[in-house]
Figure 1 (cartoon, rainbow, N blue to C red):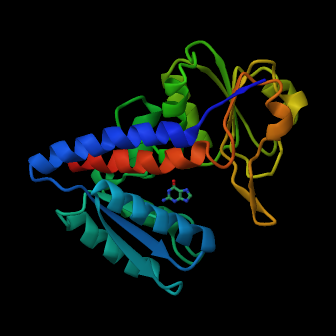
Figure 2: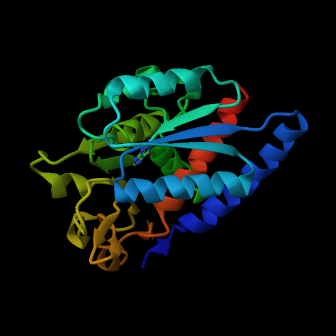
Length: 278
Ligand code: GUN
């Protein structure tokens, strides 16, 4: 039976470290500042943004939230980003994804100064990550790596299989795990022999957005299973992994909720602190 990787507990510990760092910065008259831009009224995004604002408040990070109407144009959004790039009190800029489809999201993300790109979404920072340079790393993959390290999971030489190839999770995760000397395989919706591959995983990271997609027969005995999925079914949050059955074969597993989720936000706070010292 797997032991639980408790994201709430691990993130609470990291939060304490962050608080201590903020105190040190305050002694030097630096107050980390984060600008969050939300365009439109996507319900999940609205909740995420509110939670980010709340955590900034708890930790003593100055947050400015820009709630823009659905009708905002690309050019209006780029103008706001330009202003925030120039604003010395703002160290990090986060544009909540997704933005309405009429906006050029790629252009908007890349308008953020790489020095303020606490999401690690700009081409510059993604490029740095791929070649193994120190940079801002996308918060969810960074949180997953922090969890694995906290749990003393051996990564070097192990086979890490990532299910999902998104720019936010799957792709940056693969670069991070390569840097940690894992052998990395990325699977996705067009992979034909999925079970054959997931069965080889020592570390299985799933971010495919399909509830209970990974079943017990797809997991090797004693694998470490990380579930990034957040699927809302009848008001309940369900992961991409069939938790109740997979926990019988895995050695460690993250729950949903209370696994990867709480880690993402503390990594954002940690990136904001880093930005305030650049
Ligand atoms: N939407 C879902 N996850 C994220 C994230 O990590 N960053 C941003 N900006 N938007 C998101």
